[in-house]
Amino acid sequence: MKDLLCSGFQDAVDSCLIRHKSIIDVLTKLTESSARVNRAVAKAVTSCGCLKIEAGKQVFPEDSSLTELARTTPNHVSGELCDMCREAIENELGRNLFYLAALCNLLDLSLYDALIRENERLSALGVYNAV
Image (cartoon, rainbow, N blue to C red; front, side, top):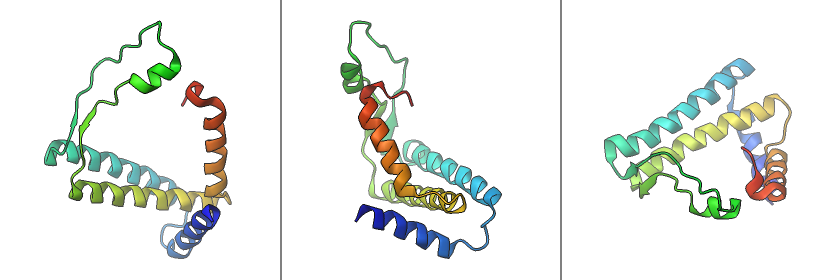
C-alpha cells in the first residue's frame, strides 16, 4: 500500500513534468524548493512570530549516553505553527517532494526503495546514525 502511494506520486510527477524535464532543471528546481522551505520557516519566525528560535551552543555532557543526548538535546524551536504558516510550509515541502520524485524518475530510482533503505539504515544504526 505504501509503495503504491510513492509510485503513484512518482507517476503523477512524471505526467506533470513537461517544461523542466532536463536533469539540470530538476536539480536547480530541487535546490530552489529547498531554499523556499527554509524561507517559509524563517518567515514563520520573523514575519509571523508563531515560531521562535532560541539557539546557543549545544553542550553535550561527557557522561551522557547517546540515547540520553538524543532525548535531551534541544532543537532550539519554541512555539507552534499557525494555520497560515503551516499551510505555507506544507506547500513548500510538497513542491520539494515533487522535485525529489522528479529526480528519482529521471535517474530511474524508486522513491519508495530509497525510503525503505534509509529506514533500514536508521533502524540498524539508531542513535549511532551519523547524518
